[in-house]
Image 1 (cartoon, rainbow, N blue to C red):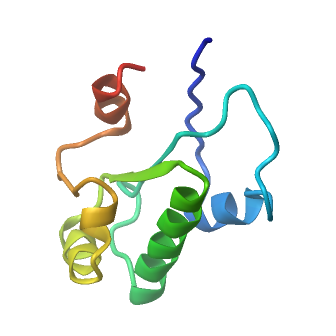
Image 2: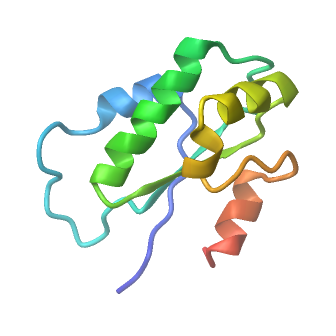
Image 3: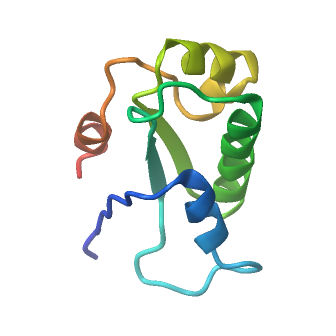
Length: 106
């Protein structure tokens, strides 16, 4: 079976709203990982951090993972304080979408 990857350029809140409610539809290639690139967001507030926490929970309930890349210093600090870092596989400041995809063999 082939594996397909898509890089979505949209705000995470739009991604969360686009997830179907209820049971995910049967698909030969279900979403297994979402990578959220925060490099264009110089800061993140508490609401944004909590939304990412909720997005992680939603994806995890569907068997998918969330990775966050490009978070700036104060954003990383907030995500760590909120406990998001442990849930998304760390917050390496040098990680990029490309490096995450390369690490999983995409």
